[in-house]
Image 1 (spheres, helix red, strand yellow):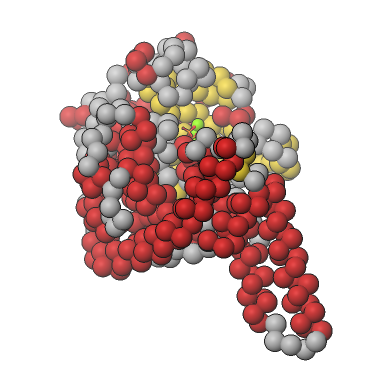
Image 2 (image 1 turned 30 degrees about the vertical axis):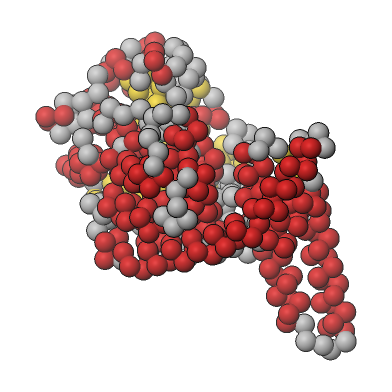
Length: 476
Ligand code: ATP
Ligand code: MG
Ligand code: MG
Ligand code: MG
């Protein structure tokens, strides 16, 4: 079943059950606490928080998401994409668990000829929060899930809140058992690669008065209205319904992967290192196209930096695979080809997207040309001295003189089996920043022109914000 068909079935199913179909919002979140939309509920947040009256009691959507926290998982696990689509159904004080649970089950297990996804019931597992007897009962008694396939888990996995006082509540997740060839027996608690999480149902029922961590919070009481927020990963569903091994081999990523392999003259499936690199390229090139499509431009901070990092990792991996210096235009073309059936606006925007990606490739190639030799001699020297740690001053010089962002140095070091003294690097960055500040101040008291120093301080100040790829915006 093609991805586009999974999307159609999802929307049709919930539309038939009284949900208003809401188009995906842009990846650029209309929300100051978020860099990029990372879940289907984000556009509906004001309704859940009671800040706005919802124009409909129930809604369904397929939301474009980017999760920067998952970037390092890409290609290594079988289930994490940096860009993915979250299919959701939402109730704003309308139905609750008693309907959300049976509806989810119905869509998953109804036969494909009748509009469902046709999963065999005995391959599905569900999880509930330890004390959530209500959900456990619904799964067991109303839906008929066998009790040995219902697992109870703690708040780390089965409680949702926003990290701040506000709404929260237990969640219940549905997993598909991919079979013994994919890992250990024992349900999702034992192995999340064998048991693939496909759908999370969140029951927003409580008001939290304080939140100290994911698992440590106080509940003030019940919310005036009880809400439902669910999210099912479209790409994970496609992985299962297309009978492929992992999320990078589904219809919408395969085209990109295949083009990358062709450009590099490599065969997918022949060795692990090559395969991981090809998966990273397929994932990141597609994410880059979706980000540019939504108006993100490469830059040194925030979402611009997320995009830049996506493109740079794509380019480096292509180079490691042995592809020619310029391959971005081809990868953009393949990504648009893969995604345009669901997002036709990409086709209209083709020229702009391609130009931007090709320009970034040009400038990154220049950085690589200038710094790679320096990196290599530093790596050889480090190894020669019997140390496994690239000194902080080397990382600093690569950054300061050659324009290597620290994550590039970290990545290249890892490939050489080295770590980097990031503490030392940070200290030098800090010292440089302080020097620049002091200089600027001296200039200022002398009534000189400080703009150039501001610029330097700015540039350096920005450079250190590189290190965290948190989804939550820090300062600035
Ligand atoms: P996992 O535990 O596998 O990392 P999650 O618990 O972080 O997933 P949720 O936050 O519950 O995921 O998101 C709801 C659904 O979105 C998941 O059940 C999954 O189907 C999908 N999903 C989440 N992260 C990704 C990702 N990086 N790539 C593809 N699909 C994802
Ligand atoms: Mg996750
Ligand atoms: Mg999970
Ligand atoms: Mg989850």
